[in-house]
Amino acid sequence: MTDTTAFNDIRPYLNEEIPAVVERLLSSDEFRHTFGKIMRDYKPEALEQMMRQSTTIEEFKSSFGYSAVQAVAKASTFSLSLSGRSRIPENKAYTFISNHRDIVLDSAFLNVLLADIQYKMPQVAIGDNLLSRPWVEDFVRLNGSFIVRRGVNMRELIAQSQKLSAYIRHTITTTGDSIWIAQREGRAKDADDRTQSSVLKMLAMSGGNWGAQSLAELQIVPLSLSYEYDPCDYLKAREMLRKKRNPGYKKAPGEDMLNMQTGIFGYKGRVHFTIGTPLADLIGSVSPDLPQVQQFAEVARLIDLEIHRRYRLYPGNYVAWDMLDGVDHAGTHYSPEERETFLNYLSGQVEKIEMEDKDVDTLTRLILTMYANPAKAYYAAQAV
Image (cartoon, rainbow, N blue to C red; front, side, top):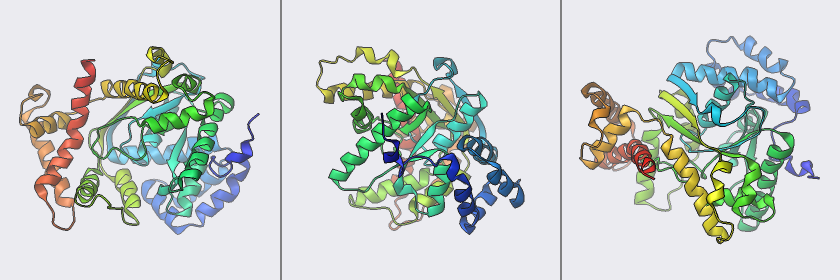
């Protein structure tokens, strides 16, 4: 039997912890300001009442959490949609592994989309590097998130990975809750979405043999996320250029918070999530006789193929691909008006960038790459 007290520092809050956490949140001026801005259609008294009425984590997620995300979607998207539901039967727990675009909204949108089809909302993995304020950790753990401890030494990293792996397996197999985790640590700034083998190794650690087959009972489901516009694209481009100039570049304090705020409030256009084929239906092709390194590399490749072939592409993806390569790959997929709309958007995003020795051409190319890469990967995956 698993000693669940070992998970106390990373798990979501328990139902009996809700009242104290709610009062801490309501005593935070920054929390009140942030959610007052997000949920501007609600009076402060109504938000307080909604929070205090929740007696379980599920109630909090389905009332306050759901309402907050719906408010974001209403204000900053043209549409929010989900396909592939038929690939995952109801009343089962899954480990959703997806590409990662937005720090907050990838998992938040997934929760809302699953709730709308009466599926249980997953628990969400979030790195402690993003919990820059005490109220942020309180809120995400109240909303069903568990913490990935980072920034530790190698010995502690192994112990934390073992704990995280055990927690995820316990949650799937015993608690019966689904999990969402990104395919890699951090967002793919250039949208070249590749699953890190280290994520798969972590998941397998609690399975006994550490091989690919130990992933089977986690019910892994690849999930493909497609945003028409990434409001953080200009921030990502700036960070990539700074790292190119200085490989040792570290983000300044507050940059993650700026990315979170920009992602939440910035316009995203059409947003679509596609549920892929469960890994259990694909993993049989991975030979258990292969060295473990090769097993995980092959599983990562299978997940990537599912994510790539299920992207939903938008005119901007095709325009960026053509512009980047200087070739008409996909001119039939967009009109002159759609091309002009994307180019105006592109120039506007580059204009927002404030940095030393601003290189407009390089920054433009970096943003184009973010939008072109999904199109390239999609067509490459169709050919496999």
